[in-house]
Amino acid sequence: MSYLIEITLKRALQIILAVLFFGAANIQAQLQQEDMRKFFEDGEYFIAYGDYREALFNYLRVNKGGFNNSDLQYRIGLCYINLDGEK
Image 1 (tube, one colour):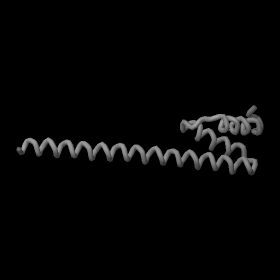
Image 2: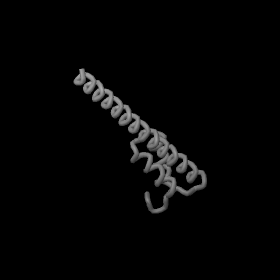
Image 3: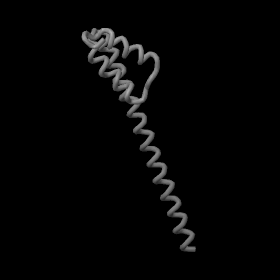
Image 4: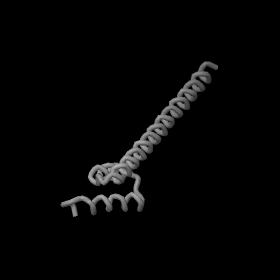
């Protein structure tokens, strides 16, 4: 009987640890997505004020973070076109 309780407790502990691990991974992914959104919004701000170097820095951070689409590529290209000496 004691052996059965021990196995049950071990299984419960494994389940709790798995839930905590996957929960932490999910929170980390959400934080990364929020960071990438912030970098993109900062890039938008800098483009609006003509600071293409800072905008490029932020857009490249988003690109390096694994978020890549045609809109982001367009904005990166726009920054490069408007930087003096970077063409």
